[in-house]
Image (tube, rainbow, N blue to C red; front, side, top):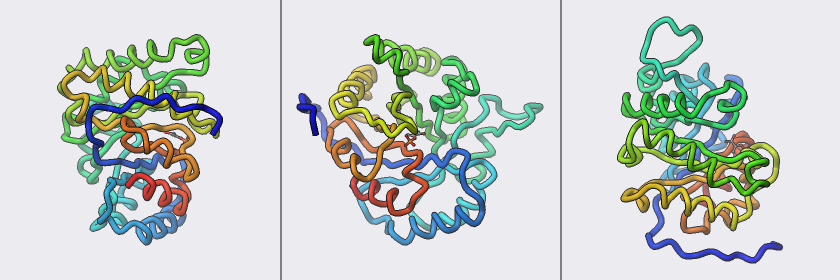
Length: 259
Ligand code: PEP
């Protein structure tokens, strides 16, 4: 345990919890079918949390077909900010809507860092998701250097403001936020409850009149053994999972902890 929790109570009741599995560039037809069989076998859907799975583009159709009729929803890992045309290799929002996606992850740190997506581009992608009636899951989070220098809230503020100024705050009525500290994603290092609580409260405070309505997920090495402690915080409304979403038992344990 180590750390003493200094958590303040949020003034609102909790929102419905949401658990999102980001499969990243993993899977094959056979692996997907096996993993989903395990997930659907254990998740009956009558429970108190929403569950979304985001496979790689080539498997959206396969996964969508397997999920059809279940309560588990389909999501995508990114999209093009363009609507259609000569953009080789890109995938549009209307294509994702056509495949029955409900959510799209935007601004994941791997895309910000490796594909050099700018704050402005992330804002355009956010708008592109909403243009076709889907729900963006906007990821924000600081680097280790930002945190060590005490600048983590500045980074998050900059990333949020880029979208606020492009779409207006009202657009967040149909959006999900995810706090994903870069140093915690895929590293096995999870933010402490106090660290996560500080940032989630800050993010909520930036949402103005929508503060009590928007779901804010935590992402960064969430596993079955630490999920419950994070989900107990008033301002954490679920999780965005990478590694843990590739194991049916681990994924289901986290979904159950979210209920
Ligand atoms: C992620 O990629 O969004 C993520 C949270 O990964 P992991 O759970 O593996 O840290």
